Image 1 (cartoon, rainbow, N blue to C red):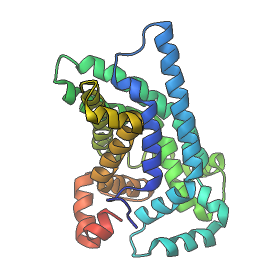
Image 2: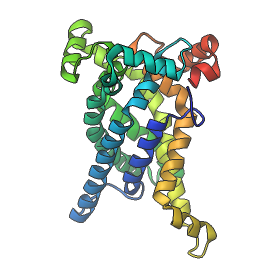
Image 3: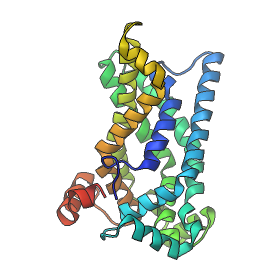
Length: 285
C-alpha cells in the first residue's frame, strides 16, 4: 500500500507541478513592482491550474490512498478499491474532488506569498538555508490554517462520505448540523504540527538545490546535465520525493485525526500506530 518509500504518486505529481510554480518565491522578497506582481500572478495561476488538473486526473488514486491511510485493518489496495466501488460506483473515486480543487487556489496563493514574506523577514537573522526551511514550514502552516475546513471536508468525503453519495455543499451542511462547526477543524492542531516538517523539507530542499545550481560554474558538467533535464522539474521532483518520504507518518496521523478521535500529539499517535499496526504496515501504509 506504500510506493516509492512511503510516497503516494498523487501527492508526488502535485508536489512536482506546484514546486515548479513556486520557484520564484524562493528567490526574492514579495513582489513590489507591477512587472514583479504580474510575473508572480502568472506563476500563481499556472500553479493553481496545474494543481487543479493534476488533482482531478489522479483523484481515484488519491481516494484509494486516503482510504488506505485511515483504515486500521489489513486490506490491500485491490480489495480497498473494490470496497470503494461497491459503496458508490465510479463516482466514489472522485468524492471530495470539488473541495480539493476549490482549495487549490487559495492554498497556493497563501503558500506562494507567505513563503516570500517569511523568507524576507528571516534572511539576515538566520543563515539562508535555515531561512528556507523555516519559511517553507511557516508557509505550509499558514495555508493549512486558512484552508483547513476544505481539507477536512475533502478528506471526510473521500473516506466516510463515500457511501453517502452527496455533493460538497450538502455534505458540509450535514456535517455542521450533525457535529457542529467545530467538526470542520477536527485535527487542526496535529495537522499544523505535522505540516511544518513536510513543507520545511519541500520548500527548503527546493531552494537549497536552486542556490547550489546557481553557484555552479558555467562550464560545470553538472550544470550542463541539469540543463538538459530542466532544473525546475528535477528539483521539484527531488524535493517532493524527499518531503513525502520523510514525513509520510505525519500525513497518516493527521488524516486519521480528521475522520475520528486521535491523540493531540502526533508523535504519541505514531508510537501507538507503530505498536499496534507495525511500522511498514502502519506508519507507511
